[in-house]
Image (tube, rainbow, N blue to C red; front, side, top):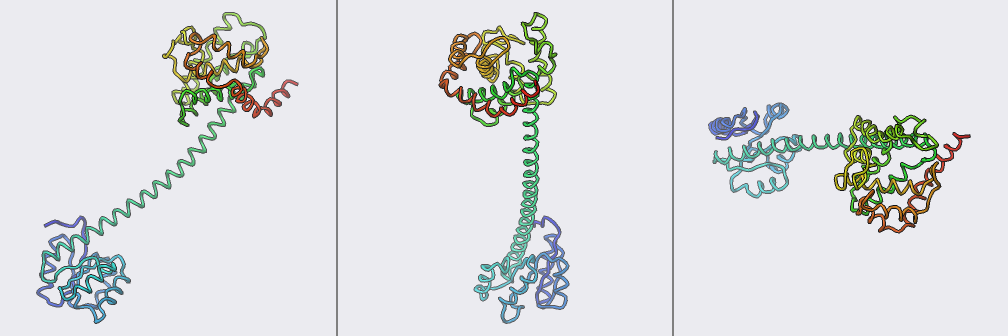
Length: 368
């Protein structure tokens, strides 16, 4: 005979002592502690119920004249108590009503021991499963609450992280007033180019933005005497400048940023024809995000003021970029750039740099 999943306490209320003993012995084979009483209600009933009774097995004939109200009152007083009612066919209408209204949990024929045991087992196992389900629900609610708190904390950390990156790059830009705002501008160009090329997933675009913002972080390690030199650089100085991608990659590797960010920092000076640095990668060996950034970087460089030349307009930038198609730049990225009207690129630049106006004023004040 199948046994209960955990020890239970049953109470049998049966007038006939021999029948009561038989039921107690039969139900005891399920592994339950079985108590019995001869009448209902009984003086000891309340104490048994308060002690944590799991199942009451009672003959419907032992209840008072208004049996429905009597059983309903019992269930109301002890809502967690499971009730197995013993009723013959004459009491079927009452039993059906009690079952329908959820007052009792099961009905069994009083003369069929197998039926009684089966019903008792079903009722108690059902209750155990319901309790386990409720426990699982509580744990799920707790996990969801913890997840919500963790998500909120993660969003706060992400915001602090993003602000730190932007402040870091602003500080780097302020080292060189001539390139002020460069990182923010190329970050926007890169995201737009990526979108044209079919990269629409928010996380991927955010990685490209972060890589663009941090692309020149390695220049923190380049001395100002080289970085701000007004004239042309000699060979040794160029060698030091060419170290900044690897230096920057080493810095971000320490803070465990994602691969796409590192790809832009390390490979943004590679050329499509393999003549770039630091690794001399060629064509598709250069990560796509680095190929995208290379064109965005050149677009901003061409249209911005530099100590060694005046800014050129976007038509000149278009001509220069098309001329370098297949040599410096990936042809697919060049075609993506050309698919958007120059006026749109000018608008992107204007909208990005207008946000930086207050910072430009600050940079001017530094030079007073």
